[in-house]
Image (tube, rainbow, N blue to C red; front, side, top):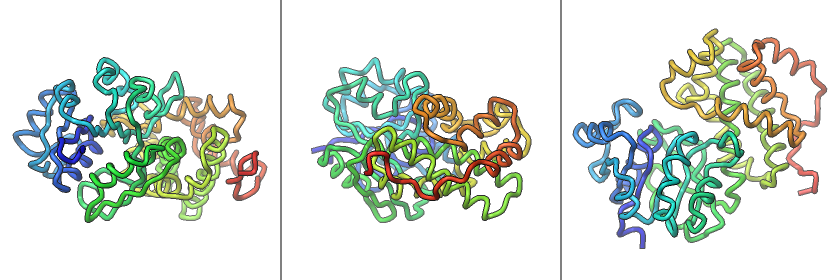
Length: 340
C-alpha cells in the first residue's frame, strides 16, 4: 500500500510546494525533490520556499532533497510538477526506476516539437508506469492558504484515482475522478493561452461584458479543438475545463494572466516574462497550438489573434476589431462531427 510509503513530489515551484504541503497535512510523509540543492537546503532550514510561495510555512512532514534516484527508490506514488520544458530531460535518465510507479502529472503544458501532453511524455519515458493527471481550478497560493478548492484526478486506472483521492482529499481540498485523462489534461493546457488574452483585456480596461465574451468564446474554441483530437466534450463543462478557464482568466494570481496584463500595459513579451520570474506555460503553448489548429483545420480565432499579437506585431485592438468583424458562428458547438 502506498499510504505506508512516503509520497514523492517532483518540482520545487509553487504548485509542487503547495501539493507537498497538502499531502503532509493529510499525514503523509513527503519527499520533495528539486533540482537545486541550495533551494532544498534553504527550505529545509527556513521551512519556507520564498522564491515561489513566500510566507507559506513548509510542513514538518515534507523532506526537501535533490537526489532524484533516492526519492524514486523510496516512493511508489509520484506527483510530477516540473515545467513542461524540463520534464522529459529531468526524468528520461530515470526511466527504469519509473517503471511500475503511479505517476501523476500536475503540469499544464504541451511539448513543443511533438505536441505531446505531459502524461503522454511520462508514458513515452516509462511505458510500464501507471499514469494519471491532476488538473482543475487550482491556483497554488490559494491551495497553500487552504482556500476551499476542488480538483480532478483523471486516469483510466480506477485504483490510481482512488489512491490519489485518498492521499489528497482533505478538509479544504476535494478531488473528483474522471476517466477522460486526455480531455482533462488538454483543458488544463489550453486555458493558459486564453488567460493571457484575459489579462491583456483587463489591463486595457475592457468591461465585464468583454471578459465574459472572451471566456465563453474561449471555451467554445478549446472544446472544438479538443473534440477534433478525440476528447469528450462534456469534460470541458467540468472543473478541468470551464472551472479552470474561469479562475485563470479572472485572477491576478494566475501567471498567464499576469503575463497578459503586462503585455496590455505595453511591455514586450520578453519584459513581461522577465517581470513574472517563472514559467507561464501559455507562452510556450500558443505557438504549438496555432500550428496544430492549422494542421487540423480547426477554427480558433482567439489563438490566431493572440499569436498575431505576441509574434506578428499586431495590437489587441486590431485583433479584437477583426474578431468583431468575423462571421458569427453558432453559439454553442460542443457537438463533435460524429454527433457525440
